[in-house]
Image 1 (cartoon, one colour):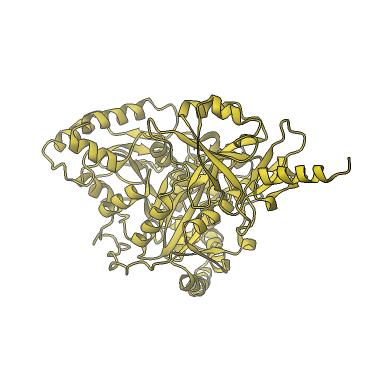
Image 2 (cartoon, helix red, strand yellow):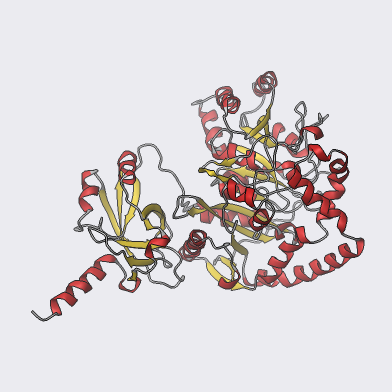
Length: 585
């Protein structure tokens, strides 16, 4: 569900807001999962639709259904912050909610979250833990779990979230959508249950970068009643001809032992190079240290200042992990706070060197993704790991956008974040749009074929090419992969097959590929018959395009002969034939 598509359909009369909103409402009402905490009364929804009849269809969000994280006030609907004992009935809607409704948007309901926005997993809630829409075994990310899920599953066009330490960006990454965290104060937080008030942001979850930009136009605005509200900065200068991004040195990037995430990051780097971006490595240490300050330092005391007394008075009615985390805020002194503030000022100064090298910092949004069982085993340690690349952003007064970065070799989503100094929101959106123009995870439109990169036994003239021909596939082109892939000769396979994996150095040569086009039905039939250790993932081509393609489970190439230097399967096979022909007899 796209904002732009809905508005276009409304204007040409191909659909009607009442139909779209009713469909969204019914889908929310019938949802089997725990994404929703409460829905707006249907009578109130109908009243909002009735008001649209007298409104201009030129309203920027005319008839667009949306969801609201349940720590953001909506008049007439209780705010719980995922704690029933905390619930209250707001007398008015939050500043940002009122702006969206005035622009024609229709609220459907309030979404699930980590209680008091304290968590990055989506599991710390009495309403039931959400899962990633892409694999129910894995957490949805949080704390804006429900908001991400209802956008990703197509129930609503967008959702409001909050983001103090990554609470909007992490669930965006784990559900394959876009999460925009604008500059601190750009979107007013009056009417939001505070977590860490000086750092809290309302963030925007959408299906596309374009929708995020359209939404920011409406949501952003100065609120004279909000002491943390800031006026929009003057328009930035036109971007340079060359896009410059900075990334951490290879030894500063951690994936918690997750080789598939590491391989996906290497493909993301290759894609950045293929887009023509100038990529420079920087010292990531000041960013990493600032990230640790958020929970290891005295800023946790700000959470205690917001909700600590409630946790003391109603301890049995609060999630025990949330209580354990927030109660540590009592342990910091004013001396601790001043020392940390001084250290943060030093880190801000050191981190500014990055912006002399690049216009944006590119990072994995999260180092890995955990199953619900893994989070249950280590609820605090693993939650903290998820914030490795998000925690520092508000402390250093930066803006950020999380966008899909393609699919891992196991089919799970991988996200990247683009981060820039305060006030650079529009430039960051333009950069994200450049990345999104070659969206790795884009689904084919109705009637459009699926393009598939083949690397070995399915190449023209090879033993399994007949499978493609039998499915009606057509050869589109012979190309090379982006740098950063490795090719191995898999042992004991009949017919002989190679295995291609990510994770090679960015300078590694591209691998020869053929791109074939199949119907969606034929693609599904082919995928159903792919034998392990081969998998279908996302392959980035030398020119930056991303297509589906044959990849291999990383564990299967351990001990296999690497043949990357040959540049492709055919060249390797030809070398074997030459060697065999040269043997005596």
